[in-house]
Image 1 (spheres, helix red, strand yellow):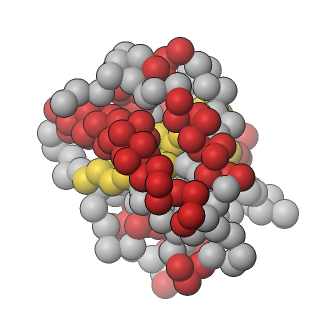
Image 2 (spheres, helix red, strand yellow):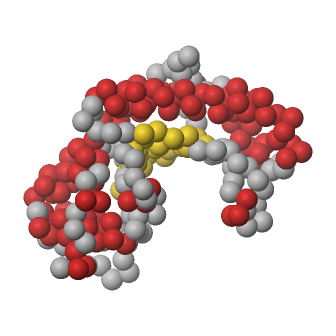
Image 3 (cartoon, one colour):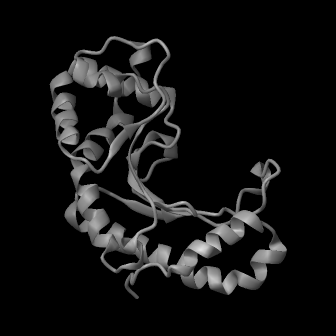
Length: 227
């Protein structure tokens, strides 16, 4: 079955979880959850995975859709369910924080998509800085390509005391502390309810594909802290 668009009713469902986060509320609505939320998200994930894999057959990729259930060990006083779902397409890795991922997320307030790290390790960012130091021109070329598009914004926490990079153009990339993302955040719109969503996301992801290929090999670089 192909992705036909999310049902607009999914917005009310997500807000329902936000304000009624309990087993008593969710269980009678589990079939609705699978029909209007989980099912379309999995269909969207399949199409994005297939589409991106077809364009990049040299990349070994895996895809994943998040579970609605929160980890019982990490509830911290919150309810047992997430009020949002996300999907990722990335290369397989023993430590997920070492690899950049393409993602799409649907939440009560809106949706977002892009490319980035989820809590990148300090070692990963050290390897990025070392690679930039050794070959700034390659990253400068990628940074210029990113600057030409207006869909994604570079986000991420920076060091309080900025470190000198090889060029001003690279300063924002060089000084990200715990990873970064190129993110687009939007309010719910007609695209969400349309079968055109996968094609649009693939088009936008493709703008970031050269950067993804560059970042996806970082994990194999030597530890610069041991040099």
